[in-house]
Length: 450
Ligand SMILES: NC(=O)c1ccc[n+]([C@@H]2O[C@H](COP(=O)([O-])OP(=O)(O)OC[C@H]3O[C@@H](n4cnc5c(N)ncnc54)[C@H](O)[C@@H]3O)[C@@H](O)[C@H]2O)c1
Image (cartoon, rainbow, N blue to C red; front, top):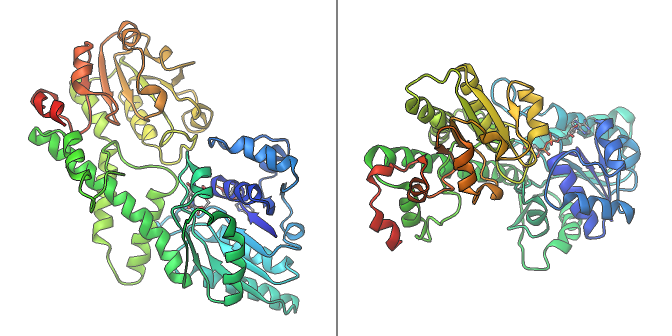
């Protein structure tokens, strides 16, 4: 089988590479010629664990190739995925201009039956727009070529994208023709060996499923952050509360960790887009509006703790920041809470020294030389007035605290992800602030009995 994947970003590159891995002939296409030139030389545009090796292996086997020429690349393909960006427009709705531009180009160049699949996250009704765009281009050519559209939203998580793609919790495909269903069944067969479900449904439901999934996950995060803030006020420990509620199977223990707000390229824009879709259709998504409000507020929580501690005067203070990417194991800086926190610190006349294992190059695009970058996490601590743990990279979990203590000017830690234990930190001589944990009032026996 031969397929084309249009848009070679986080989703397109992982999708194309994983299909090649199971033996399918894949061409990944992008309009960014530098990106494609680099990929041809084995240089990847993003950091994703395990991806580089897989790209190189499949390129060498000639199952995976890269091109800027969509017209040439779709020839002989049975499926063309659209995996380009759908950034938020000014009003919060998903901007479909890239998706529809690709659809038009496909319509201008296809010569045989093709299933055109939207993998980008798109609102209900987009597949119909894709179909119209292709149809118009075919009509303009006077070409009578059959095609189908399908919706196959992607659920991969950056940082674990390959595993998620190869061993998915589920694959959702929206179709409205038997032929398309057969083609998509054949394409995904290699991924179903271990019982992973392939769920076929109508196209609007598939489009909605992606937004509903991200909206639910964002809701869990904001709910838990709200509870954490209240815990802090009331003298409860959210780490205990999390364990207490997570053991209820109806709630589950995943995605209920409090922190400094969700970021990344998906949750913020998808929550906005769903609110917008609803309002355009006369409905108001009250829960999601609050999810957004809580999240915006949460991005300032760590900064507010810093301000409180230093009595509102940060001028001349130096802050070490550990972690810049919006979450660990990715270099993605889109909507990263670190950007909000750093901007606020700089506005107050503070100095910031940051370290991230992979995202510093990406971070420099937005932060430039407004901050200093450490060669490792320890270097950022030299003469620091406080440490802010912003992204919970595994290597930050168990640092050499004796060294940390020695390097810092003031022994203060603001832990935005609750990766350290309040009591242990205090025993090690640090003044410690977590999220949703009011240290002085945490009953220690409760901790030991959990
Ligand atoms: N990043 C994620 O974790 C994730 C997960 C699930 C779904 N999604 C969705 O997948 C879509 C893509 O996201 P991403 O993070 O991969 O985006 P991205 O910005 O990393 O990549 C998009 C790519 O599309 C290319 N492109 C734009 N217009 C093009 C055109 N006309 N022809 C060819 N290439 C073109 C861009 O140059 C870019 O390389 C979005 O809708 C997103 O919401 C993303």
